[in-house]
Image (cartoon, rainbow, N blue to C red; front, side, top):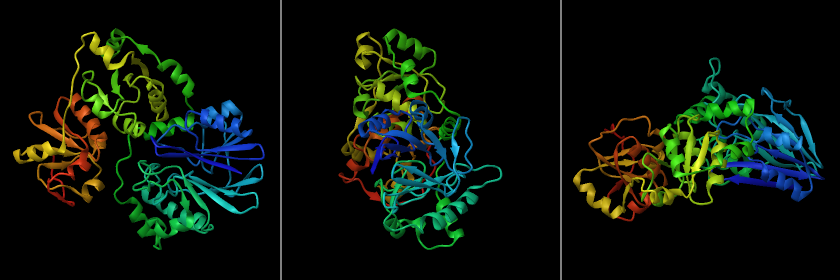
Amino acid sequence: MKLKQIYTKCLAQGTYFIASEGVGAVIDPLREIDAYLDEAEANGVQIKYIFETHFHADFVSGHVSLAEKTGAKIVFGPKATTQFEAEVAEDGQVYEIGKLKLKVLHTPGHTPESTSFLLYDEEGKEHALFSGDTLFIGDVGRPDLAVKSDLTQEDLAGMLYDSLRNKIMPLSDEVLVYPAHGAGSACGKNMSSETFDTLGNQKKVNYALQPMDKQEFISKVTEGLSTPPQYFPENVRLNKEGYESTASVLDRSEHALSVEDFQKAKDKGALILDTRSPQVFNKAFVPGSINIGLRGQFASWVGALILDMQQPMVLITEAGDEQEAITRLSRVGYDQVVGFLDGGIDAWQKTGQAVDVIKSIPAEILEKELSKGIAVIDARRPSEYQAEHINDEQVKNYPLDQVHEHELNHEKTYYIHCAGGYRSMIMASILKQKGYSVVDVTGGFKAIKETNIPLTNYVCPSTLE
C-alpha cells in the first residue's frame, strides 16, 4: 500500500495519493497536476479515480485537468452536481484500488455534498479517514459557506453534528484522520498545525467531539465565525463548472515585460503585485504596488485582499519566482496575470523611474514613540490580540483581512505591527496605496515582547479613526 500526503503550506491544504497493485487514486488534488503524474510514474501505477470531498471554496481543484490527462473517473459524494462528467457516488459505496478499498461516507454539514472516504487496508482493516472539511485536527469545518434561502448555517451545523456522531465517531480509534486543511486555512476557526492524527486522540482533544447535545454543538461551531474571504464563491463556481489548465494559464501569463510595457499595463489599470519579502520590498518599490510575499501564505492573502479577480495584474518578483507566483495565483482562481517586470525593481530604477518606500522601525523605537500619542494598528487576528497586546489606548486591533472596510485619518501616521512582520507590510502597502501615511514595525509582536513596552490581555477595542 502506498499512501502519501502532499501538503501545501501556502494554502494549508492536504491532498492525498494512494496506490496498490498498479492502481492509483488522488483525493482533493491541487490545480497543477504534475505532482500526481510524477507519483504515478514513480510508482508504476495508473490513476483510476479522483475523489473530491466537496466543492472546495478556498482553492481551485485539479480534478478536471487530472481526469483529462489520465482518463481517471472523478467521484463526488451524494448531492453533488457538476457541469463536467463525474460520478456521484452513493453513501456506503465502495471503490477498489488494487487490494485496498475506499468507502464513501456522506458527511454533510460543511456543505450538503461533503463526503469523507474511509480507507481499508489489504487485510480489510479500517486504516485512514480522508475527512475533507468535515473533521480537521482540533476543529471542524465551518457551516456557513453553503447557506441558501432554505438552508441556514444552523441547519448545516446540525447536519455536521449528526455526521460526526453517526458516521465518524463510531470508527476505530486507531483510524488515521487526514483532513483537507490545517492551521491557516479560512475553512475552520482554530485548526491545529498538525496535519494528521488518530481519531482516538481527536475524540479526546477536539472540542467538537466532546459530549454535548446538538443545540450546544450548533452554538459552539457557529460562534465567532469570521466573514468568509470574498473569493470563495468564485472558486466554488470553477470547481463545479470547470476551468483552464494551469499549463494554459502559464502559457499566456508568463511573459517578461519591458519597463515601457509594464508602465503601459499600469496606466491601463493593471494591479501591481510585488511578491518579494517584506524587508526587501519596503526599501524600493513601484509606486502603487501591493506587497504580498511569496514566502508566506501568499495565495490565501491574495484571495482575501485583492477584491477584483478579473482585474489585470502585473508582477514584480525575485528573479526565478515568476512561474511560482503565477502558479500560486492560479490555485485560487486569479488567472489575469499579463506578465512580470523583466529585471525586476533593478530594471525599473535603472531607467530613472520613481520608486516609493515604506519606513520600517525596530520595536525599540516604537517604545519611544508611544509616549508621543502615536496611532498604532495591530494587524493580527482578534484571537491573537485578545491573548496579549500592547497596553495603550492608541493601539487598535485592525485585522489585515478587514483592511478595505474602514476609513482612516489622512492626517495621521499609522504605526503597524503584526506577529512577525509579514502581514504588517501587506497592510502598510495597501494603506500606502490608498494614500495614508504608514510606518512598519520590524519583527512585529515577537520583537515588541522583547522591549519594555507594557502588555495586557484583551480589552474591547474602540473605533479606529
